[in-house]
Length: 328
Image (cartoon, rainbow, N blue to C red):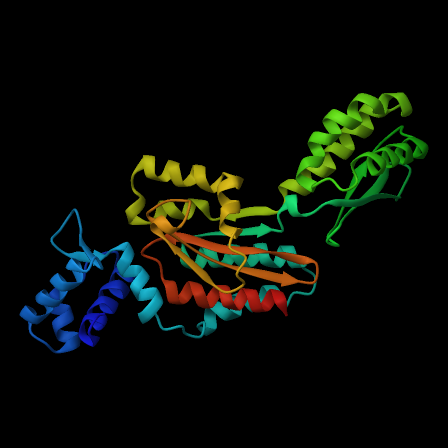
């Protein structure tokens, strides 16, 4: 258990390093806490022995360790209201009644990425958790129609497709084939089922089968690939601790890997969760802060990914704000 003075020193070190990416001098700590340099050095040595501080490679200064950040987050972090400027930028997006919810979320994460220089992620409901309930087609003109996909959880997607020289009767036959053969299939498996179960037999029933097969295949592919969005991946290039090409490549590879990103949402807790360093699956030098949201049939996960030297208080307040805006 840390003393009050040790906690004050650790808090100063974390907040200084978050802001400047440089170790704070013991003289600065002395001035703030009004104690001798010998006292500060002794306390910092005790914090290092406890595993909460570590020496940098480039100087004799000490910076927070992973355990130090965890202690700060669990015991010392003070949650604050968002500042007025941050709040206004996000409110403008959510007060735009012309934007659908998905666009509001994406645009708000873009704004947060720009304001913080961290990457942001939105993960929609896992496609594997949504089973196909029904597919419908609504003709618009002689050459265009709206394809409507409905899942068992009430999620509805629609997309306009254009088909020339294809009869409405052939379209109906294709829809009936899909509804009869692959209802109840997880959305993310439908493209495979179309390939191996619909494609081999569609030619027996439909004359323009290639054109129709390709159109519906593209609709389902777009549906399953649209629920993972990473914004601001290049922001890692702005962080001084990620100057290594190999380190950046590893992080970019992880942020491009949907399987890795899906691990973020395995914890279904709706509260803000913070995964520091080795606690996340992306990289031991990053922190992932995430929360879940639900609005009617829309649900998913919002996450912000940055260095362990992250402005935790600001990020948590931003995520709380967006979550509340989405759910309201």
